[in-house]
Image 1 (cartoon, one colour):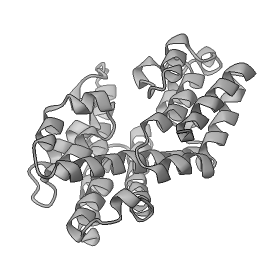
Image 2: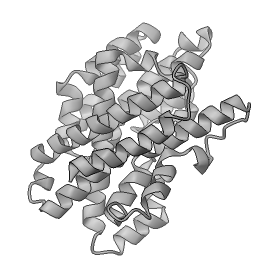
Image 3: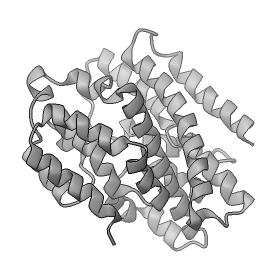
Length: 277
């Protein structure tokens, strides 16, 4: 199964990479997302073996889950092409436009493709990167809730969301990826060294996942990644956030841009509270 799926994913990747010059940031981004897709699949498989809620899964669930993991970012390839063309044509890109939303793009790519047009895959593809409030208000979530497949669809969505974050955290920690992505590159020198902004700080204190469009500084960006712990679903993933050193790495990075010991202590306490029942 996975060999054919990998071939299909690579076809989407090659179609996109052929349309962007090799020296473009977007070309680099597509390469990263292909590797990331495989990493999320591998991470998700590990979560499944370590999670009691997923211990009794059957072969069908495992196949669907692995496909959702592998294809969760398939829309990133076409999104990069659209963003590259918009940049070339000096067209402003709206953050709210579905044309540039990789979850919606991926959903449209797969919904008519027989091996993948299953509600349990499509829900995860479309909404793995959205706030859960938006997910629960969506028509697709309502459809899942009213379906016998709803329980499995929810489990796979949570699995993809958790695996996506863990795989990203590994790259952030081992490759200092936050300082190589487009957000950092586009920041002014002033914004790179500005403290945490008030709106982002309030979101974190409220134990909310910080909204990307509210970011103003690099300190905000680091705190946003730390806030992912509030959006993790499985106990194994929450423990890995601490035990694999991701929280400590991010706190050390944040201290360089927001050297306020009182705030850093409050952040540490909030993260620790996740494990206090």
